[in-house]
Image 1: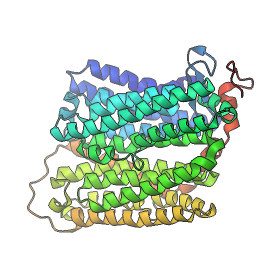
Image 2 (image 1 turned 30 degrees about the vertical axis):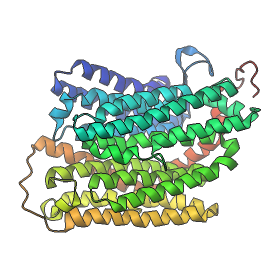
Image 3 (image 1 turned 90 degrees about the vertical axis):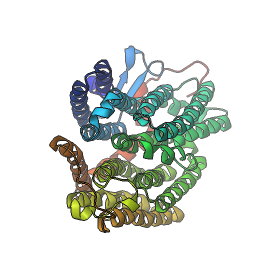
Image 4 (image 1 turned 30 degrees about the horizontal axis):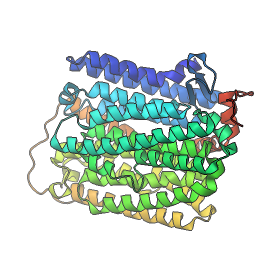
Length: 507
């Protein structure tokens, strides 16, 4: 049963992508199968998370080839949490995609591309070696580019080309790093790399390979200075696509940074810790200043994706259990909140007729429910207690203070204040001020209304749950952090008590 659950997050979206592609000319059937697959994926990832919590890490060797020779899949607490949140995002966005514009999106190929993207994300979170992480990155890139240009507008094609070009450069650098690492160590299995990396004779070359990995993963995570593709492309996508992108794509890059630099290169933290701290600071500052300068809802939210990535890097920069626990908790919170804000942005556009704040107004009078639903994730993103964002920021800032990283703590606090400014700006312009002109009544069916508001309400409830019932999430995050720092347990689980050694490579 454990092995079935291990591969289910990949096989379910793979089957859904295949079947919906075959049913290209039958959009109603595509939607039904896509929603059923999203439900199945969510349930499977919840069962997988429960199994990992109860029985420990799950390791699978594909084709019964022993590690490090074969393809290894590994799901520990961190992977299981990321897979579960991927399942939740897949379900909520699949439901939201049944709303306005569903027929046009499905006719353009939304369903197979959407599930192919979920498959790539699940594969990246489950893989146990660097080369297959590269493969899953490529799967994600292909699917995400198709989703980004779904409507085939000039704006989307321009944004899509910028997106794909920088990401192709990033994956090319990733491939170069893989070649260098394999030449130095003779292995690409993460557990085996963790075993042999401290004993590599040429540590300078290994550090150079690690820098290449950081550049590649940083491009995927949209860290400073590799973030330009995100605000140039995300605002062009349709809202279901932008929501799933905002939730998951950059987090795959963050996941890869945390996984590799806590497991493989932890012995060289004295070098990489200050580098990651500097990147975190610059990413927070540049992202929040970009958000403060814009007056388009999509661009504001896009820049805030960048700024919040900086908080997630604080954990691996400090490499303490509390700091990494804060990063894990912040990732979980941010995925939920950021996806929800993009879903709400889609509702604002449908009701108010625009994403430009100058053309919006009066939504608090016309749709007060939407105003309440906006305030929950918006205030959470800014770190207002007792919402989920407060606890994530509290833990990473406390960890920074305990580590005497005063600048990190100060910047994190200041960025929170500027984030609140951006959210208040959206509230004042879109909801509180008077409507600039009489808008025509919103046209949508009952099904579209339910499809729009049900996932928004669900994600708001999750945000409130994390904020008001924080203890289990905090305890889970701390357990995850301790497991990430326990390299020997990971190595033993994957390689066994007597690991096979490559000829000429010292442990």
